[in-house]
Length: 181
Image (cartoon, one colour):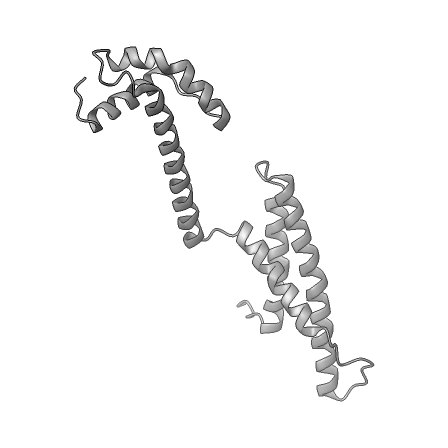
């Protein structure tokens, strides 16, 4: 026995159910924040309400086509229900469905943010190391001298660098300035 192909109407009914299930599963993930759970819950509620209203509109249309009596075949809010359903579906889909393009954009944003943070850290290390860079002190000795100052400044960014990391940054600074180790 072969499986019967779903009609467009059956697919239209199944799609919101699938989105609802995906949103509910995503909301139970331990890494999902309470704010995200709330956004998903609101989107599910909006989707349910709007899809139900749209289903009534389709039923009214069918009744009119068949010549059946239907009390209120016209719903002036139909475009609003459709817009809300689409917005809710977009919200759920954007948060729970893996999308390679969005993944690339998020990764690029994270790299950019990381690059900004790295430059900020480098500026702080340079600020405290600049007076020692021309001296005969080794990068390790400079790192030892400035470590507490750098980390005090980095506490504001909720960061901390080990001395060996500061030492590497001092070496890099010296190299970029053309000074020898």
